[in-house]
Image 1 (spheres, rainbow, N blue to C red):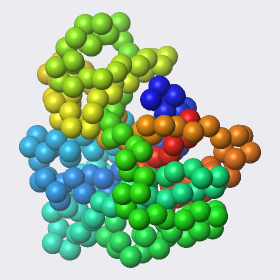
Image 2: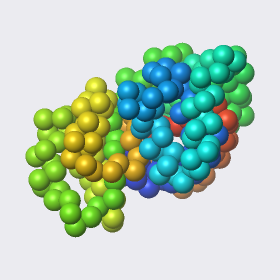
Image 3: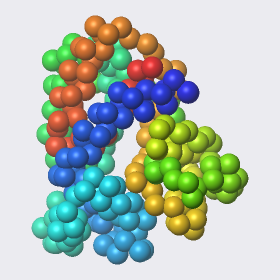
Image 4: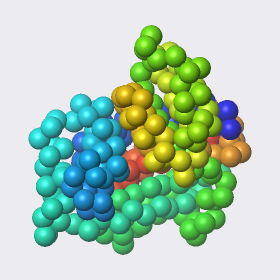
Length: 236
């Protein structure tokens, strides 16, 4: 699992940053959360986190408010959160999470990205068991935060691992502990920059630089799709 975490911090984190700077994707996540659990962030933890993640990417307040209001409108699109699984170039396994108001369009687009790269979509459930769903929280490391003390505070909330990379701290837990970990951060007064549920490969695979070039071309096309919210692979 350590190598999968290492990849998440490097190449995959780089792609995630690229995606999360796209305001339309962030706005859609806010709208989906608001339609699902209500437009009051205080009463809707998913919306609160979506707003928090948007602010971390410097999304303007007006954009955030517009995304919330969009969920209140009677003509607001009904988004479905769907996950697709596929095998890409050189056998890389890929999980694609989407939020779409037109599943027929989305699956056709995603299928085309795989097909054009020499890969193919797989039936749902084909590879899901090869990925562990994890709660992931990221925040800035400061002198005021004692990591050993923090670890003790978070164990009861479901902490599995803490990693530090330069000035960033990453906290991992099982996906079922997302709510309890998030509440623990709120109770401790720690400002989380990013909070998400991620899929981390249980048995990551190494690919050559040449193979990774082919794989990245396909991943870039997938992530550029407006309906795609996140992409995960089994790259080591």
